Image (cartoon, rainbow, N blue to C red; front, side, top):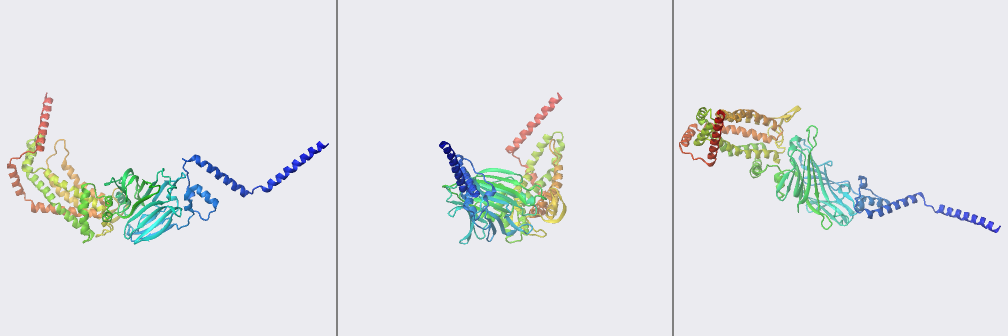
Length: 635
């Protein structure tokens, strides 16, 4: 009975103890908030335990991770640090979204986010529609750094807020944009602006970040910019919009003028994002960029549709750490593509202007640029063009004299040349030999007229490159022309003509008329002196007749969208050429005296040079081969 009671008492005791334990557990159970906090802590612990086993894995974050926050509690701060690491500190700092600074030449706006320039306005210039010139506006430009961190993240400065400060250093204005890890540890963009200067001293430096950066991971400066339209014809402007760079100390090269292009170049001294008359240039001041991956993309396919931007430029530049820190001094130029201004920096920046290659560029830099600068300092720009044209034509007048003298000699010899062709009409090779012999004795080789003409080509091409790139002509008026650097429109068309445009420019019409009459006078005389075409050779007389009409038509169409200053030059140049030709023909060259000189020259024994002997031997061999072939055919 006692055992049975014990068993019952034991059972009741166990029940009571169990009930008490249940009650105590219920009383000590955590609230829902405490359970949630515990779960988060456990999750964070799990993540922390996973990190050591994933040292090579890069953390990927989204744009929401970089949203600036204020007044956060400790739990949120821990969560933010888990997302962006040490740079979570920057997201907590207050600040204005933009900072505006003005100088004599700039109105600049700096973005807090990314620390970069959000607007660059040139105060001293306006575009074709009298609107301000903006080099950077509405995020057409990105300037940022991609870098790795010691906690295996890849971050970009464009995602983080910088702390701005503006101060003075003498007459200069200093804008400091700092991306902070703490008050004494930061990545800084430092902009120093000088009075009346388009070059900004720009430096990228870090302080106390040697333990934050992952120096084994590449770090890159990325510069992307769309060229903004500033001229009436975006197609014409785009033709002179180009990425130019200097590398290997003295080599200046360019990406494609109209199509898309890309290039990887080493030892780059500077990069120029040229937008015809305005340029954005990044200069490596102390040492060249070790390598630059650059691209250029044409954004104008249809002028009616693509009317805001000309080209998209990108450059990816690796930066180097020094002692685990960054310290790179650069120059940022935003301003006119003006040779005088660019040359003042003594970095060959003026070489970014397309003056022409080789001798053509040399003629422009040594002769036409200083000559025009001198003339335009005393005369209105349109008059300066006319005076410079007159000086150039007078300088080349001896060339025209040589050409007309050669034509006069050929005209005098024409009866004898016709007689030779008639005598050897069945033997073309013999006719050629006799013709060359007569011309050689008389000193009337056709080449004597061609060679002086070839001497004019470098001058003509140099001027062709000079006028479209002459910044001084920009928005300078003359007669009915509002802007000598752009086309002169006397009528707007209700439609667009392919290759011609939607307007009518007067100076190309005047230049086309002048070149037509000049070619009519010169080519007509040359055609009259030529004999029948030789066997197997094209009929040059017909080709020259076609050129009389084709050249003015080409001038009329091609130059309708070109700088009116260039069309003015060609118009005046051809008028002067006509005048010089008439003067030489009617008052300087005396055909009787020329004939007397020819007779004297013919009477003197003529020594053949090596070239003439070689030509004679080749013609004799060709004649022998021809005779042998004829004999074989007869057999």
